[in-house]
Amino acid sequence: MSTTARSTRPAARGLFLLGPAFVAAIAYVDPGNVAANLTGGARYGYLLVWVLVVANLMAGLVQYQSAKLGLVSGRTLPELLGDRLKPTARRLFWVQAELVAAATDLAEVIGGAIALNLLFGLPLFVGGLIVGAVSTGLLALQSRYGQRPFETVIIGLLAIIAIGFLAGLFITPPDGFAVLDGLIPRFDGTGSVLLSASMLGATVMPHAIYVHSALARDRHGHSATPEARRLILRTTRLDVIVALGIAGIVNIGMLLLAAVNLRNIDATDTISGAHAAIGASLGPGIALVFSIGLLASGLASTSVGTYAGATIMAGLLKRRIPVFLRRLITLVPAVALLAAGIDPTAALVVSQVFLSFGIPFALVPLLRLTNDPNVMAEQVNRRPMRLALSLIVVLVVALNFALIGLTVWG
Image (cartoon, rainbow, N blue to C red; front, side):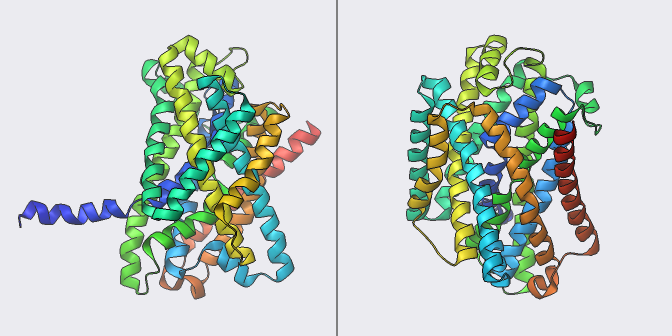
């Protein structure tokens, strides 16, 4: 065997181990992100670039902690919580987690329905039903063939999403100095705080925090020895860095696309209006690619969201229902709202704000469990990591209180 073959085999094995973080990363490029980021760029230009940068760094740190918890403990975050909470507290915690999952699914189904409307002129109600049916097929793939084929399909959809939302930047690149200026933290009134909370809710996703512990554990198993854990955790870090890095680039790219092409143009605070403006500014080809990216986003993210909901229920209630039944239950509210004729983009943005309020319920237990040496053994968080995670929790809670105050008192 040649030296080259021997040297490349470990690298190939390492690439084969990648995947769980890419599934979790889909949550960070769902249609709620599209609505929040396009609205932020169209209304405020480059002002909120810093929000996405900070949120993505936070997301990477948090997702790695969730994966590490599953790999080291051999248990998912919902399972560990279910073991520790008293029955009443456990059920209440499950209720809020399910509401967060429902808000997530609302955004994803609506986004996919908007994409089908833009591509084929289908009514939103019909589009929502089609998104539900196709996402059920993706879940059937996971149920029948296992996690690896599901990961492969999701990674392919992530590639489509990235191309769809970044293609326009190659036609009209952003102003580099303006991008740098957007890295300076600041707000511009209540509206910018609302959008910041929406971007945070769309970028640090509660259901992704819950499900990543299951994805990593189910993919790699429970490593019993410290040496085995260190090996798989190195791969997991790379998995998170690459996957969340791609998601972060896509999110920032969406905001920059809107800042360059949609600023001060009427009706661009809706996805449909933004699509029309992109077509007028960059041509129908870019608008078509954008719509395809939006459709891929809705299909992939709603499948992952349903998977997360099943993980939450199994861990907290110790019960499982068929994933197809879960798909039907969570589909009903989204389709009902579409049938009622609500403003779909407004519903997307509000759903992301709601998600932002659910983040502390996932972050605080994650922090406590990964700080517990009885759970994490030698992989327990050191002081710098404890401080960083504590700061993330404080920032999220502070932003939410600021949002409430500015909204109520103006």
